Length: 337
Image (tube, rainbow, N blue to C red; front, side):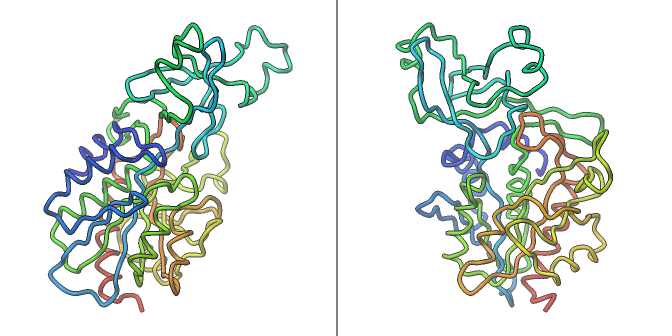
């Protein structure tokens, strides 16, 4: 179920604030697996009944949204100006296919052969990029799209070799696939699952969900940058594919619970420290909810994050499910103290 769920979720559009298709698919998939509610911001919250009542109330979070683009202006010649929704590097945007519902387009800019030699050595200014949907003028473009419409970067799902997945939106459909799979299993203890919205624009959905649930402990399922690439020193690689999920001790938003961190590394399940103190995720909002929530993040290592060509390991994905299952049980049982 795990990989087929990931493939199905990666095919769906879900730019921040427009997570409807992902939420609908998860709701259908999880019918009968728990008490489901959708809060005013759009989070899908599932209360899973276990065989035993927990010593701690545990919240497990994975965000449904992905990075994308939003239209801001239409030129007289039919070109579309846009802003990014979430963080996308210019190198990822240039000449990429983008899709708005049934409408396809390409992000274009001044071609290299028409730029001077110095400009050709640099990435284009993001403000010079526009989207071409084949419209000949403003009227044709406005018949297709409007300012405020959101689009996502297109990419297919395929396997590389025998252990790697190439897909779009692995951040964070991988976390959603792990959490959905866990919900379809028998649970030893009750726990709350949150498929959150708007993580890519400030971890907003998880913050409101944690405020409502008031958990004692939280586990955030994410995808994180793996820089195990040619030319990157070992100290900058953050994490590596094939070594299991990455467990965080610190990032720009959260100083993680030390006892939970050590419990993950000592579990006997393949995992690795996330060897960087950069980035952030839903934990930044969750751990400050109410009187405070002890929190840990477990992330799938992923090359080329926030692009339509993410690469992750199938064995890491399976280990992430195993580690999540273990941690939910331990935290709900009150361990570690």
